[in-house]
Image 1 (cartoon, rainbow, N blue to C red):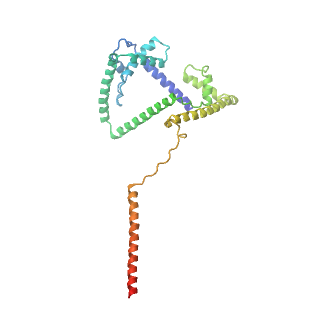
Image 2: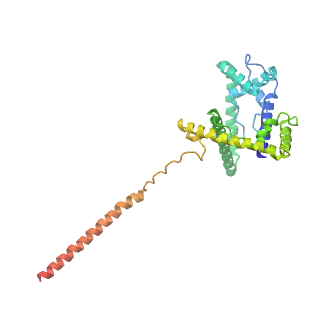
Image 3: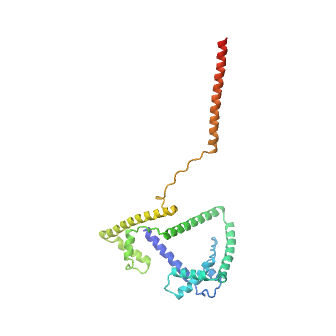
Length: 288
């Protein structure tokens, strides 16, 4: 069930992101570049009341937000990835003079953000300030993990094995009942629960075969990562164990050892002294 909830949440987030980029009015293309400060304010990109101020978009992202509705309107069937690729190419070809309004808007918004952040942090209690620091660390760790996953995908890391239901869903998704993706998922789950045992067994066997495929591919991939010196991308259970570092003697231990030798030497000296004294006494007695 966790897979279904995750997929539903991902679809919902994708839909919200697309609608957020598609709900603005059409603006001019890069042939006549205009500032977009009024545009960003109307889109609710300012700080929320009572919450921390939001970081402003940089110059490039401001250009993306401005140009995306026009491209979508002119090409309704275009994919969002193609839209971003097209805008990125336009941005690279723009002159510094054309980019200047967006860059200047970003610099002004950044200065205002710093002032708002100082005022916001001045109002926080020590406990709230500490909580904010913890949340920032969590966000940074999440971003780092996302970048790590993207890097592994770019290096050709094999996809994880699919479950029996995932294989069933990929085969029957098109003809599944429902108009929306969540509705189709619900109908597929119902069909999977009512599927006869011997039919389920086919997909369970396919899932087992996919596990073997993943096991072989991930082994080869991790061997290649070792060859190119990327041990940090390996799984923890396959990462080579480092030899335990030798424990260095502390200053106290270093100082204690000579003292022990000195004590032993002194003890031997005293014993030798006592022996000489005893020898003298014996010699004196024998003369008498």
